[in-house]
Image (tube, rainbow, N blue to C red):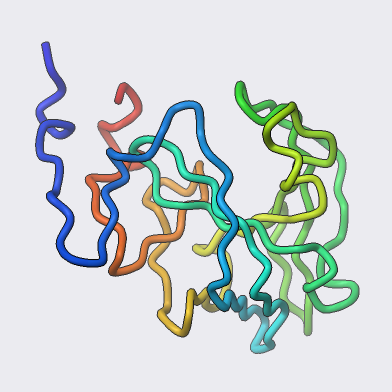
Length: 168
C-alpha cells in the first residue's frame, strides 16, 4: 500500500525545488549562497564555498569548509556512524563562548568516490544552533534531527524525518 503522506507531494512554485525531485543516491552540488551559522551568541562560520547534499525526500544538508569556522569551534570527538552512500562520518562538538552542542557537526574525512567534496567540510545540525542562514534567510531545521536538513522557502516537501516518515 502506498504511504498516504508521501502521496501529498507539494508542487514547487516559481523559484522552488521539490525534495521529491532530488536523486537517490544523493548528489553533491556546489553553491555560492552565503551561509552563516550563529551559536553561543557568536557568528561561528560564514562562507560562500559550501556544498549541498541533495537526496530524495530530504531538505538539503549544507557542508561548510572546515577552515571557514572560527578557530576552536569544532572539537573532534570519538565515534563514527556509517552512511550507505557517503561512508564513515566523524563528529565534532561545537563549542563557543560557554555554549556547547555535543556532536553538533559532522564530516566525512575519507568519503567514498563521488563525495570527495565533503572531506574538507563539516555539516551542522541547524536545530542545535542559534541560527543558520542561507543568503540571509533563517532556515528551519528538518524535523526529527536525524538528517540535519536545512529548510528554506525555496524547498518544498513533504520532508522525511518526522514521525511516521521512516518508511518512505
